[in-house]
Figure (spheres, rainbow, N blue to C red):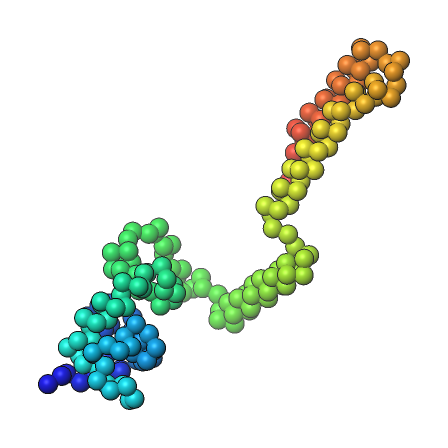
Length: 190
């Protein structure tokens, strides 16, 4: 005679023997419209009754190969014990109770920071804030274009003012390079 289990007990059995999280709802879906549909482990569809002896082997054969760890949402995945116990950066020791802020002050700080984050998100969505990388790329492109245009001034001046001598064009080139070098060495002071 088959070992008849309801959906909740079947889910517990799967979880206990495979180590994968399984709920009654998951098992119902798998049996009703999932990988276990038509499986010999289903004894009765509504209410779900399954054969406990076949359930785990059917689950491992039909479901487990198609459920890679990466496909499961992070919140539902259980990390192996070896990964959980991997050495991490040491946590700072907790503050002694006399140094901890009061609950009200702590809560006020938390709410203030949440409000700041929400304000930043809102401004970013409205297009008032840009990502740092975008700004740096745009700035680098603008600087490169400006440099190219400035270095092209002496040759353009020679074309538009034909009576300029080569020495005068060279002086213009030197002055522009000096100005660019001075700009490149500029640093904002704190």
